[in-house]
Length: 197
Image (tube, rainbow, N blue to C red):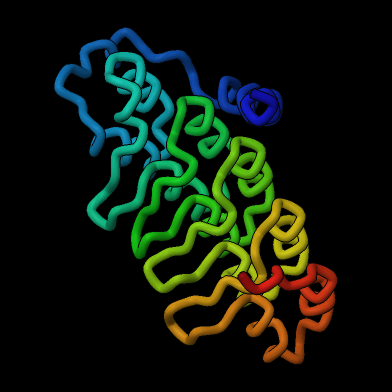
């Protein structure tokens, strides 16, 4: 519940201010579906999105486009705080993967959208869920050389020793191989490896 309050406080006011109330003409949108919602997100059409969600089951918020991305992932990919916050407030699935299996948290790490990562973590997003390449949000953040995101994920409990399936490297391994981002390696080294089972 704390996470929802954070998202409500930080994003809802912005979203309400930017989305006008649905017009009477929008009330005639019968036949709309999940694809229409994803298109509304892509086009930043607040009236249409509000009307679709007002008249459809809750699960429609997790509809995917032809690439397999949800509206939430699309909003995160473009670094859009208003739409990200609004979709989270509408109950978007914080762990549902999109194209390539990227979760919303992986998308946030890939584009360096720290506010989205903050909201997702507060709402209980799984920090170690990997995409189809075995990459976790932490691995992506290390590859992007995004030290603040790396620290944020480590503080949320991300495992720096989870290996991907592409190269068999962990976030710790990638950081050690990259001589340009020693601050990232230092942050990871401060998190001791988990004891072997």
